[in-house]
Amino acid sequence: MRIFQYGNKAALVVGIALMVADSFIPLAQEFGAWQVGCLLCVWYSASAIKEDVRINAKLKKWLYAYLAIVFVFAILLYGSAEMQTRNGSWSIHSSLKALGIEGR
Image (tube, rainbow, N blue to C red):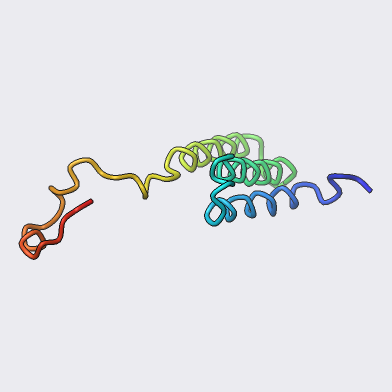
């Protein structure tokens, strides 16, 4: 039995499983499960583009560049929703401040 019998589809499944595990398992966050999962999903997409004979070479280059940009943004923006904003109290409307609602 070959280790990579199922090929790229297994990489996609493992990548998605790692990304989901990063949300629920704190130990997975420490080892960068989200980043590895994103890398495996991009690898699957890039290999699917490579194997498709209907796509011409010029479009393949643009699709590879698009995948690289999406990968970089996914890595850079991961965790930005949990980050505390600077000067967050300025964004709260004055009527909400009067009610006693404060920003983080």
